[in-house]
Image 1 (cartoon, one colour):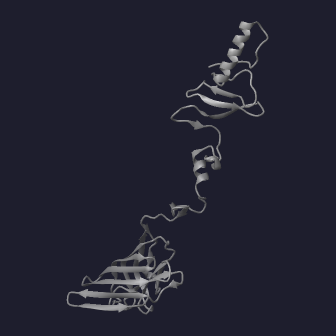
Image 2 (cartoon, helix red, strand yellow):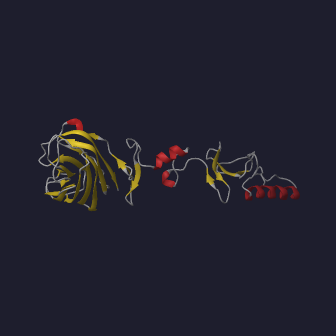
Image 3 (cartoon, one colour):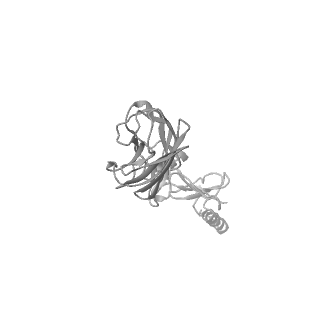
Length: 285
């Protein structure tokens, strides 16, 4: 460690020689010391040894202050000041601000997760298992709709709890794409199985879940709709009848014109209305 006044005094040879050596020592050690050199010039380096590890500093262009370059440690070197994003930094001085600076805008994206397509990172709905909002069957409407299903979804479970209608038409599920809810492109069948008989009904206008319904009955169970290709979906279902004397099984497929966007629960013919129970969906990628 050495510091000097940057001037070789006019003196006898031994004194001049010592003065030269002092200035060279200061130059070689970058004026290292535990306090700033008394004499400074613009862009002069100084290794501040008052802390450990030592800190590398450089005098500014106006020769009025020191700029901290970074701490000198072989394994944990860290820069001082603010480094712009374009130069590999964050342009910020706190961890929270640095994260915000590097991420896509978080405004309006509460509850979303960061998703990448392999090139660009964006905010999107979490791609775990997402449960929708319960729809009540006591609203006396002929259709119960779930819309806004994300394009990345590959499996949807439709869940029924004591859902019932005011008529005898079988329950039907329709899928929507960018053109709306499709009424064609289905191949499906539903059955009612009792202790004495089995009845089967087919449909090409939706995914039929039963062969018939009873206005006095309610239905509980699940229907799983799975994506095989971009616009091709298959379904399987099992519903228990509230009478405890029958259950319904179903299977089918649907070919859409574009990516699925919604699920509609209705009935064959679309005239019966729902009068009790709850239906909801869960979806996953």
